[in-house]
Image (cartoon, rainbow over all chains, first blue to last red; front, top):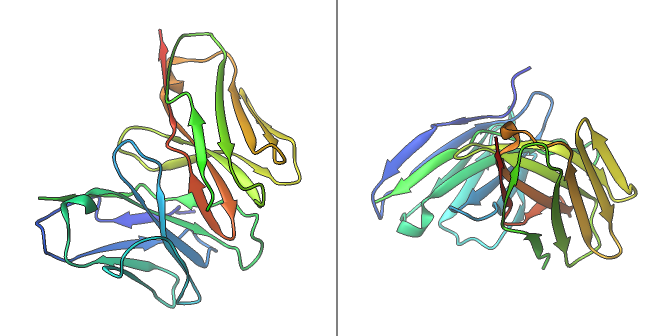
Amino acid sequence: DAGVTQSPTHLIKTRGQQVTLRCSPKSGHDTVSWYQQALGQGPQFIFQYYEEEERQRGNFPDRFSGHQFPNYSSELNVNALLLGDSALYLCASSSPSVTITDTQYFGPGTRLTVL
Amino acid sequence: KQEVTQIPAALSVPEGENLVLNCSFTDSAIYNLQWFRQDPGKGLTSLLLIQSSQREQTSGRLNASLDKSSGRSTLYIAASQPGDSATYLCAVNGDYKLSFGAGTTVTVRA
């Protein structure tokens, strides 16, 4: 049973560019959440997608947007990249359509470096 | 807004010593609390999940307690090993999203 997968593993971009990160949830999960983890910090919640809609959003600017596809996979898009966007981006999947008390499972992350 | 604090930020112990990691949170209206392990540059591995109605959870050498009313959780790791060296993060689940502490970085010296 494949866990949560993310691509790419690493990415280097320059300021002002746009980036797309991808996530496939664990089998049987229908909800995907995205987190940003800066160096030395805990992950910060960006947003969550359920039934192809953004259900919740953290304190991130509109430059951060996302999408969920019918197969539950998800994309995170970041426009007009800033140096401060350099971080590890983590995707987590869960199935709160069943119960909110489910464990969230995290992928290995995408390391984004903005130069 | 939920605030999660982990103390200490870093810990170094000799092999065999027991580890005690602390987590506190400001809003007791949570569904559950999870402890994660993170190796450098890697994703998060779930260690233990404690539901809000539970007082503790155990898995092997790991034991986590939860006192929701006082906003505290403690992770105990018995008989530490060099392989336990990692960053340990606690996260509280409120309204579908996780709020994380900054983590405790543990080094177990052989």
